[in-house]
Amino acid sequence: MKFKDLEEDVHSVIRTNILPMQYQIDYFPVTEASVNASLTIMFDRSDLQYKQKDGIAEAVVELQARIQTITRKPVGTPKEQLVTVQVPAEQLAAVVSGQSVYNTMIPLQPGKYKLTIIAKDMVSKNMAVEDIALDVPVIDPDELSASSLILADQLEKVPSRSIGQGQFVIGSTKVRPRLNDTFKTNETLGIFMQVFHFEANEDTRKPEGKIEYEVVRNGSGEKNPGVFRGCGDDSECCRIANHHREEAEAGSDGTGRVHAEDQSHGYDPGFEFDAFVQV
Image (cartoon, rainbow, N blue to C red; front, side):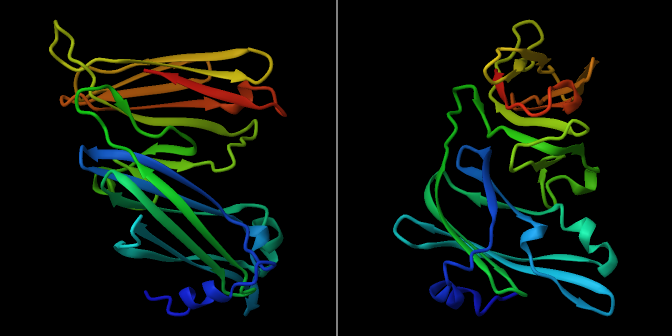
């Protein structure tokens, strides 16, 4: 797929015709010398323009993401994707109230880069262009370390054949970030992160860790706590209490993945909350 006209359009984009776009970048170390940068982009469908033909309404956005070093040397091949919304015309009014979300993983070495995102609505010709500074972290092999923390609206295991494959998949888990951090009372709030370099238990000689989290309502101090403990083998530890579902996995190499799911109906609507995680 080649978007031949997209770069030329960037130089002539009219700033009054900007396509609203949200994005988020999260980092997940693979080795000491390699990090997956997870890029998530979201559009409100109400901001897209639709064309109708034969009873079908369709919106199409061309996306391109390219990375350069700080000396402007291209890194890898630009990521290019079409984001399409296609529905029966009579259902369009219901569909435009939602969002369309795209995700891709970009492998990078630790260091500083510039990411450029270009998006173009192919019906309205409105565009978005964002230049973003990236500071890809390096993990110390001798220190307890963690990946980015994601608030997610989808958090689920994937089949073994899909591990590491497809949008939103991190290892064996599908993690779809909620970019606006807003959850309705009937939705599930997911918390996901990876932890690296747990020390081994002296008795079992297997990695062991403890992770605590709190969700605190701003201005009140009211807390909704939870705890999950790392396992000492490749099995999965789960516990279900009240409206929490929490899991932790630790491998024999001292790495681990932890996530929690919290039903949002346990929180008062209309308030803001902060999530704190301690390893």
